[in-house]
Length: 104
Length: 226
Figure (cartoon, each protein chain N blue to C red):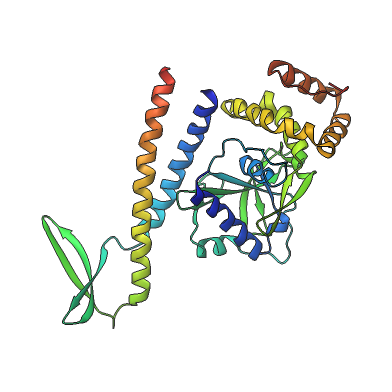
């Protein structure tokens, strides 16, 4: 049990370091989601964000923004959010194990 | 092992190879045990692996000219974390791996971090890794030539550091590693001979530590020195 516990403890600390690094990277990316809409056969991009109960869409002009860069940033933002979700779930599991093994 | 984790490991090796850094680093820690499965006879099962991949950098001046590894790793999708107190850099590949570069601590200094100018990264410096750095073994795996410590020296080092291993919670895992690898070392004529030679070079104090650790944990070391 002590071997497993030490490995989990190690992984737990690593998990927290990973979350810190990904939160830091996420803070440098746009906070809102980039959504694509097809209207009359043409593609338009919008920033989608919530204000109270309403979801608002703000048009992103390709003349004013580098759409390719924004798409890459949005993709990375989604990746990081998914990673953080997994890490958070894993953190809870490990905390539960460490709590139980401390009493056992 | 998680197939994604294994793929991430080989992806990291490929990046280091492309950056011309691979010949200058040695894989140590639990991932060295994974690489021993390419070296030992069939049947060797590596022990529990954690997500941290430790690369030992024995010569911090090679390669020359220096390479900006951090930039390359970021371009390859790694996230970089810098310790606020020591500036030690750790790199993460998704939620699969944590990459760390370690250096040898030399002299009387107590610095726990040291710059590695060849790759533009500050790494953790450890005194206990000197023995590993002195005994590299090139392993051919998946089309790469990767340096790992000689298995006999890996085992010996784990025994030698056992009494002062920090954190102490890692000691049982080290003993498990010794128990897993030692039978394969003793079965191989070459590795057994290397272990015997290393034991002959040990000081009296080191031999005493080895004897005590082996006695406490019932580890059989069939050599006249022990």
